[in-house]
Length: 258
Length: 258
Image 1 (cartoon, helix red, strand yellow):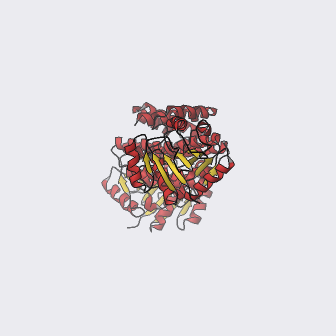
Image 2 (cartoon, rainbow over the protein chains, first blue to last red):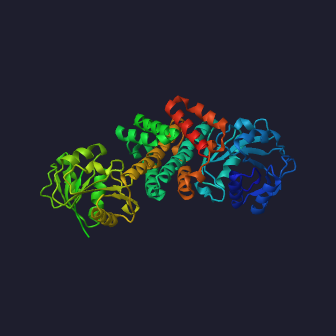
């Protein structure tokens, strides 16, 4: 079953979803950008679809409108957008509740949240992207499930409240793990050491974490309760107050949760 | 070139190193454990080598003595151990300086630090383990390089001061990334959500981090400066003060280092 879909937004999520939808045989009818130039750049790459900077979609053939704009813009765009009758409006955010679409002109609303990190220019294997769905309307949920299934085998129905918890967990599991590596990079560079040395450790650690679970996979001075090492590391880091405090707090939490 | 090696210690590092040395054709002459029973358990698995609970190695045939005990025990064991003439004593720790071996009876001292996370029962591919070496004696360093090369293609000569920075970086890159995932697991379980949902995100994030570098790979609400989301996440986490504070601090550091 193929759908006609309009994409609202020209960011990373918009781009990756539009490509995935096209690859799955759906029709992209329009791509909306606040700047028409940006939207046009995209319609050159995505084969079909018309670039537009107007939120008046009265004459659109799309059945599903995918709001892939920044979290802070969702509410404004949802209020302004003019949709054809009987159309479905979804947003793609992990942290914005469904209700925010309640005042829109959409007959049906829902959430279509691809739980993955998207980067410009880096292809995404949607077979590995869980799609988190929500809608108050059973028929809409069914349509969203079909749409999700057409691009990924991993679909979950998750309520807004749970999706928020999940998004916070994702921040720890993705943004914060990345930032811990960032701090490690900086410590190495500051000392004139080759960061490459750490890569095998990072790969093995993360493999262990996912295979054994993070609780069992933990090692290191905090787990061993090696206070001398913790103290000496903390002192070493006092050139940067925030990083020293992150060291102290995370070590303490490792100790406490053991 | 094959060496005769005594292993002092019965922990994870001792076990994995002993196996790797044997696989590379070296001879394990003794395995020392404070409890003879534990050492004997090991000599059953490692084919050669004699179990002992005595630190008097006057009559040992070993040329290299590998101290793979806990950081806090290194100094004591190094002071007590009695070694044959002309032998080399190395420890395997990332955080203990070389000088700690200075008062031992060893003619030559050094460090042989495998930069990897070792887990009981989980095999380690030493081809992926950087070995960090140090010695004040050039001849000893040469021997340690040969020993390292026999088990891994990755060897680095790293001074004690740099090795300390490296160990701290490793704590962030390994123990702390693991703990971020641990917190994510707990948030999911607390909400009754399936942690499996997050695994593709974790794998893709870490792949990106290593491919692009952590600075460029970063995404999420802190990077976007999305203060509403940060505030709402922080409030959500106030059931656990430490985790809420970790969220605040790491987010702040992502903002500041951008």
